[in-house]
Image 1 (cartoon, rainbow, N blue to C red):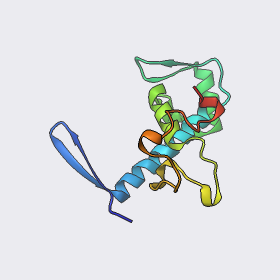
Image 2: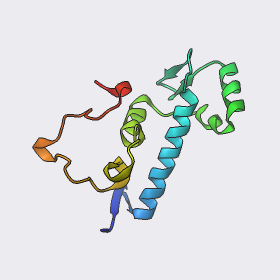
Image 3: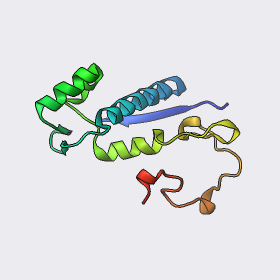
Length: 133
C-alpha cells in the first residue's frame, strides 16, 4: 500500500500528518460521532442553538442523559453542528455490507466495478432511506 501524507495550513503554520495521525483522527471522529448519535437516539423536545453550537435542552434532560452515559457530558457545552453531522454520516454511517463486496468510505480502495468519473452516480446514491433525497 502507498504512503499517506497530508499537509494542513493554519495561520501561516504548516503541519504534516502521516497515516497514523490521520487514522487516529478519523477513529476519534468516528467514536465521537457514534456517541453523539447515541445521545440523540429517540430524543424529543430538544433543539439546536446555532449561536452557542450546542443542544438546547432542559437541565433535567441533560441529567438523565449523563446518568445514562457519563461520556455524554462533553456534549453539554459543545455539540456537533448539523452540517458536520451530515458529513460524518456520509463518512461513517450506514456501513453494513460484509464479505467480498464489502466496502466502507474509509477503506481507501474502491472495489472493482465501481463507476468512476462521468459514470459515477449522483450524490446520494446508496444512501439509506433515512438519508435519501
